[in-house]
Amino acid sequence: MKLLTPGPVDIPDAVREAMAVPSMLHYGPDWMQLYGDTLRMLKTVFGTENDVFMMAGPGTMALEAILGSAMEPGEMILIPENGFFALRLGQVAEGLGLRVLYLRTPWGQPADPVAVSKALDEHPEVKALLVVHHETSTTVLNPLEALARVGREHGVLVIVDAVSSLGGVPLPVDAWGIDGCVTVANKALETPPALALLSLSPRLWEAIERRQAPRGWYLDLKTWRWYAEHWGTWHPTPVTMPTSNVYALHRSLELLLAEGLEARYAAYRRAAYAVRRGLEALGFPPFVDEAWASPLTTAFKMRAGADADELQAFLRQRDVVISGGLQALHGVILRVGHIGLARHRSHIEAFLTGMEAYLQHKGLPFEPGAALQGLEGVD
Ligand SMILES: *Cc1c(COP(=O)(O)O)cnc(C)c1O
Image (cartoon, rainbow, N blue to C red):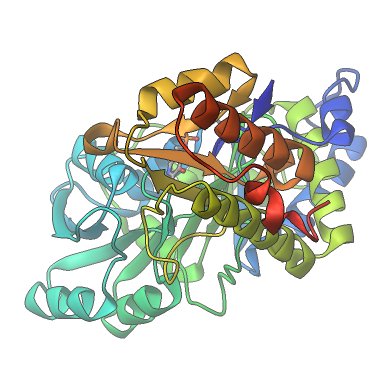
């Protein structure tokens, strides 16, 4: 089976094998070495000197932890909404009793910093700006640097869902002034699911310290800070950690940093280019404009005579797995991920030859072999 999905992804053998490490303690000197090294590498990938934590659970949990720890019920947040994951953020916020102001852009279009600036001018009660960096449901890469600048200029906290972007595209947290940033191990960091990774700025800590309403224990980030400060030389987290996953993440980060962040970003761009050239040659139109298309996932529409569900199932029969469209985009688009092993030639070739086979099967015309012409330079 070959996964060309936006996550979870096929992971390198070295990372998969690291998961088989014997049981280890989540405290004590050996652990502190592994834990400390992993956090140091994460800070490099996040481009931050802020506090970074690893929490067992999905990315949504870490976003909920940040919102719940920093905001009081009834406070207002602004979400530029242009896809499924922005709506999900809103549901998390509403579940915590926050008031959500959505600034809507059609799905497939990027969030607009000018409109965000205007909305913040009109709503001085907004406390935080929540941005989805790579809106995986549409494959749009939102202009985060400009959005974060607008947020800072208005003095609001800037909190980012970078679940599907961090490690795959530039996202220098400190240079862009991002207060809370969340990603997971199982997307561009190419590790199995289980870990959410988050960074917290001093401004965000101030908000967390100010917050009055009770806020559970595990998801209260104050708890995490207390352990890091008071037990930090021996048992740095409040609870047991998924040690094998941390070990595998450590391996994956070593591979990423040895390759170099820029080189990895370029590998994803080459993979995206190869897939997009191939789709173009086969007559499948792109769903989003190249100007704001993320290099980590490609969404495409159907050509006449092709059916999205049927095509997805046809590829699945050939052990090639891609993703469908969500909600209103179901049946309209299909999505191909470029992260994990999907950035390599073997995955991309299997996908594009599967697309050719589908056209053949449907009796639709295409030029044999033309789809593979963008693969030069992809290893
Ligand atoms: C995958 C994804 C999520 C969900 O992550 P979980 O780990 O399942 O909570 C959230 N936001 C974006 C942008 C994603 O791509």
